Structures are given as structure tokens and as C-alpha cells.
Length: 280
Image (cartoon, rainbow, N blue to C red; front, side, top):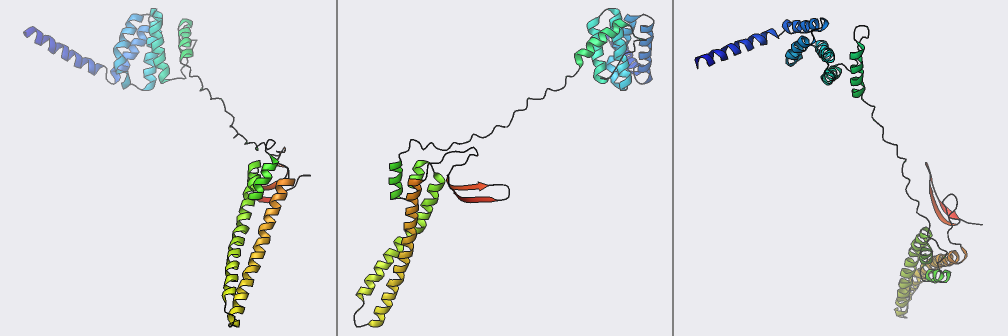
């Protein structure tokens, strides 16, 4: 038991002494000793010194660390252990990627191993992904109206302006005609109903009250005039609707992507065009 305690104390003191020897200038001296061993041909002794100091290399600056890895690699090449030499060269290149060896002071055998390692650790430039051209949105073709029945289209437009155009694929024209029909038919129906009511009120006025009769008549005439105006407008929309569905050809897409005739709306950089196109 006594001998074991003495042995532990001796090892602990020895470890403390070694820790003091590898600190500061002592570590640099160890590196110089290793260089001397290498230059003197004592490669095994150089390896022993350098491997002993490897765990303390971080105490040195980067240049000295690279120097230690480099001489350890030199020693391994001279000692015949190529793989361990490559491992040390990789560590040195990791710290100094631009490291080069001087052919005038380093043997060709060592330079060959170094070049092999350097070729392995060359970072390839990142491959740029292929440029994908922007995908153009698919152009929605105009509805083919060649199979649409012109008789059915005309009948639908007779019932409701714009309905035949919608059936034939002319959505813009059909929508426009439907809006115009609503804007004229509704006022016409309202004015017709009010005019009929005013007419009945006029007939209900007692014959002995000429003033009330005259006022009722004037109101009836006013609403009759409104009914006439709105009726003419509604009839005009209806007739134009029939003209369009009978005499206007179905839209055919041109080279500019526009139809030969009908309503159109064009949007440019600084202006918007709205009109009606006639085909000849």
C-alpha cells in the first residue's frame, strides 16, 4: 500500500513537471528539437517529440502549429508511413490553405505526397443550378363557335339581349348587351306600370272637378313620355342585339390575339382603350 501511494505521488509530480515543460517557451523548444531530429535523420525521435506536443499545439500561434504538422508529415514520409503523413498535411492545409513547399529544401518524395493531399482537399466551386426559363401562363383560346347553332343563338337573343352572344362565346359583347338591356328594360317596365296607374287615376277623377282632372291628365302624359323614351331605348338595344347576332361573324382570333369584330378593351402602359371593332 505504501509503495502504491509513493508511485502515485511520483507520477503526479512528473505530470506537473511535464505540464510546466510544455508551456510557453518550452513548447517552442520542443518543436525546435523535433526539427533538429528530423534534419539529423532521426525521424523516429522527431515523431516522438512532435506527437508528444500535439495535445498542446493550440498554445502556439497558427504559424508554429502549421510548422509542427508539416514536420510531423515530413517525418512520417521519411519513416515510410504515407497515410499518417497525409493526415498531418490535411491538418496543416486546414490552417493554411495556401501552404506551399519549397522544392529546393524539400525532397520530391515529400512534395509528391503533399500534392496528392492538396488535390484531394481542393474545394470545387459550387455548381450553379441550371437557369429555368420563366413559364409563360397558358393562353386561353377563344371558344370555337363553329359548332354553335346560329338559329339557336338568334332565338336566345330574341328572348334576352346578349344571351345568344354568350352562347356563341362572345362573353364581353354578351355581358355588355345584358347590362344595357337591364338599364333600359327595367325603367321601361317601371314607367309603363306607373303610366297605367296614372291613367286609371285620371279615369277615376269625378267629372265635376276640372282642376283635379287636368292635374291627373298631366301626370299621366308625363309618365307616358317617360315610357316612350325608355321604350325606344329598350327597343334600340334589342334591335342592335339582333343585328349583332345575325350579321356579325363569330370571333376569330387574329395574329395579335384579338377578334375580328365586336367590343374590345385594350390596356397599355399609360392608357386604356375601349371601343367596337368592325371586320371587313
